[in-house]
Length: 384
Ligand code: SF4
Image (tube, rainbow, N blue to C red):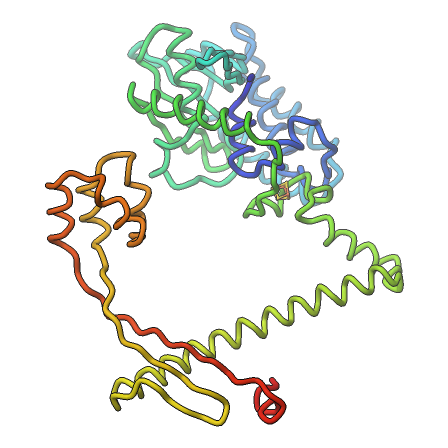
């Protein structure tokens, strides 16, 4: 497979979005606003720093940016462009070519990952620093994210990995540059083990993509800005309903019928949820009454309520995880599945079993069953 960071990240976000992306499905232009602005800033910065020995003056770079801005018609994108104008100018002032050693700009790379897979991409800029080491720069036009997760960022990890291989040096760090925020940088240098982990994770994801035949939509926080939303199965019905309302087609019997059924299903589900909540609260009250009065069965004209008090074993998940062997049983103890654990106990060593036994506690639980008697006489009482 030939993958890129964008492809992998898109799949992680949503498999269906990935499928749309690789199939080059049509995009909704009203949902690519941020992309158009980002592309313009990248083009301006490429122009500013790409032509070694013939760097253009700032005025020319800004003129290119303004030309790109003049091609935009959407008022919201224009607002972004206007905000970006002063930010870009400030970035150029602060990052004059005379004080930099630019090695590469918008350079493509392609790297063998193993298993016959290749990863490719384009790195915005590579600078040489005064101490002879290198810095990869990736321009961002969005908000500054939490810096704590930088070590999990596949994009800069891939770039560092590719450049390390190409330049045969480990003296490389990678920075995300937030152009709209005074060129604020988030910098990270991945260690050997971290890069190996990212590579393994990428290979696992590739295997997952290769095995995927469904590419199911995964509704997520990015749906609102997803350029494929109008053709996405998770959203098309919403578009259809909107269109039908707008075009006055709501009298179509099929549409009216299914809409009524959807409404009924949702209303029933909401009622069930309310009833379940109420039932849970009532069970708690009734169980308390039973316990306090030492009664295990309660009667009414509508039927019987039986209450039983039991003791169930509970395991301390954190301590259990310390004892269990890697890979074999760790999955079981994310939350302790007592049944699975007790099945697995015979496969553990005596020492492991002894340790587990030492931190078993007993938790009291209450089981309550409600059996309504449904007949004509009490039907009225049961009607909701
Ligand atoms: S709209 Fe949401 S669910 Fe549909 S493809 Fe885009 S990201 Fe995935």
